[in-house]
Image (cartoon, rainbow, N blue to C red; front, side, top):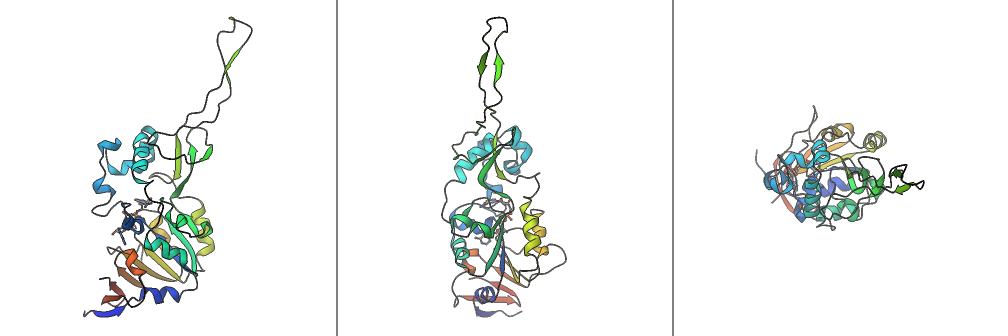
Length: 280
Ligand code: CNA
């Protein structure tokens, strides 16, 4: 089918929404140097397995692997997650939207929040790095800065009585700390989605009139199934086409970088087939 030149049709579509919902993936952070998983230059292709003590890239976020061998995750976190505190152009755009109803993000980089989106509008479907939980005693803490070392729980255990009873009548008490591994509260493979996700979807599902899915391969379940939960028009913004989960179809598709779709009106796009737009 013949393609036509059109000015950026995404912004008027978004502005016509009274209650916009975004479902986000790692693609919205690649332009500021945080690799996604599945792109050809993504983590799965580039991760140096031996450097992080992994057998396969998926081990990095595998819960069983983490419990058995957490050092690799914390080394990677130091190398990769502490570099950026300023979001992409797309993150900044989100923070300016008056009609933003909610963001459901798979990302753990926290850049929606640090770019100025109010926390009440963000659902961290795969958790966030803000807090950590001791895997032994379940105590919660703000996540300590990544130093490359495995952070251990400092909670004192019940004082133990040590030393032979007979040596003296004075019992020596030694304070021990729990020393369980402090795991950041992000969802690893093998863990369920955060419970807040289904609760918030319940509140949002009928309110939304536009759902924009951005920078995700929609390969991770159950997140990919969330798309179907909402009423309203469904729009995909992604470098590659990804299929709509289930029986539905996209109302509009933008095959481009996420930063590109938020450029001001006047930007020229090619409409390839009705409803599918190609960036420059
Ligand atoms: P993915 O499976 O790697 O897919 C990313 C998708 O984004 C691909 O389809 C790419 O074509 C597309 N893409 C890449 N760059 C851009 C761009 N600039 N503009 C538009 N599209 C782009 O990643 P998913 O998010 O689908 O997978 C979910 C995992 C990835 C979650 O569990 C995350 O926690 C995890 N993850 C998060 C981060 C982060 O927080 N920044 C980084 C890496 C992985």
